Amino acid sequence: MIGKIDKVKKELEQEMELASSKQKYEEAAIIRDKIIAIENISAKQKVSNLSNNDIDVIGISRNDLYVCIEVFFVRSSKMIGREHFFFQELKDLSTEEIISGFIKQYYVGNNNVPSKIMIEEEIEDEEIIEKILSEQANKKVEIKSPKRGEKLRFVEMAKNNAKVTLENNTKDKYEILKEFKEKLNLNKLPMRIETFDISNISGTNMVAGMCVLLEGKINKSLSRRFKIKTVFGQDDPRCMKEVISRRIKHSLENQDGAFGALPDLIFVDGGITQIKAAKEAIKENNVPILVYGMVKNDKHRTKALIDEERNEIPLSENAINLLTRFQDTVHDTAIEYHRKLRNKEMTKSKLDEIDGIGPRKRELLLKEFGSISKIKNAEIEELTKIKGINQELAIKIKKGLE
Image (tube, rainbow, N blue to C red; front, side, top):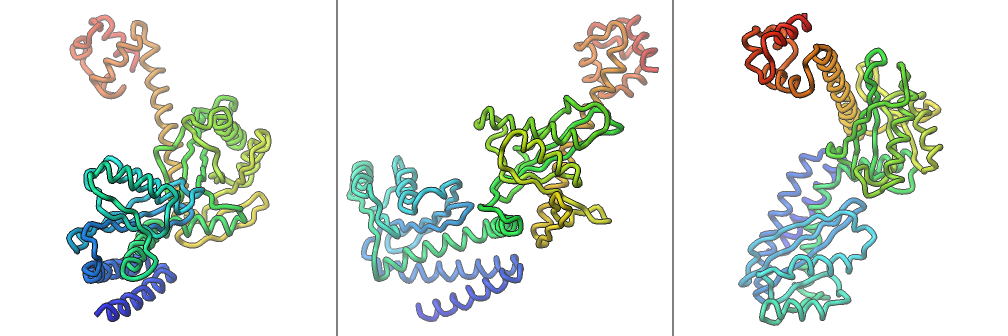
């Protein structure tokens, strides 16, 4: 029976790889779920062969983005469940160090410590951890790395499950970052990419938006907005240079600040002049960051990256779709900030010119009526209901908004 299951599982794995290679990810995910279901059946059959009835089995898989740890829970000769965990920024640690750290983090203080923890390779501080967990659980706790038999197969199964889970959760992101690395001739995966967009109307309220692609995913919480300080008049390249220079200085002055570490790549929303402006800012601040532009086709849809020499770098459909969302996000960030400043300016110019209206009264009026238009159309009696506004001031407001 087990041999038959293994054969079916192998066939499904081949089908899954074929579907993934053709970028049929939904089909691959369905096949993956079938593989997991078969592994669960197989696990329940195999677990009865384990002499110890109280075991956790730990498997680990990793790529350049994440580490995935899978834990099988075996109780009374039955696998009662499993759980997986994702960790980032562990690429500098060995597998042994990751497993050791996980066991200490997961089991110390945990009331449900098994009698045996099975792992794929021995860890240096095994005896110390065993002693701590044994005292904590008031029973003997062992950490074992089996070399053969059913126990080894069970560890390998946990490891394989971790691999499948990791691939399913990070495949698209990893493949796109790998594509950027290869197409742009980078030394490593670009884990942090930033994009910038300038927004202004007739040179007024000039602002910029910045968005971040962190580990292959757009992270809106890291978006930032800039009000242009040194450029007067409509000059997008100079605005771009100012903004990127300011952004770089934030990290150079405080890497633990709101902007975090410097990006591996910068994509600008614009043409050759914006690329050159960004590169000037980078050169002046003496930091090693590459810059590319995001260009659109006749239908105003992102079509490729370009370099300073106007060379287009063709990308896969998945990468283009991500770039489109990235470009749209930074554009929306800049536009929304521009709109906010413009509305604020309009509100300030109309209400603040009225003698007797200060910040507090302006706030009360807008809170009550919601907009300048509604204040303008309000009756005198309605205006006098606002604290601090008498009939004389209400009349001034009406005339001032005409």
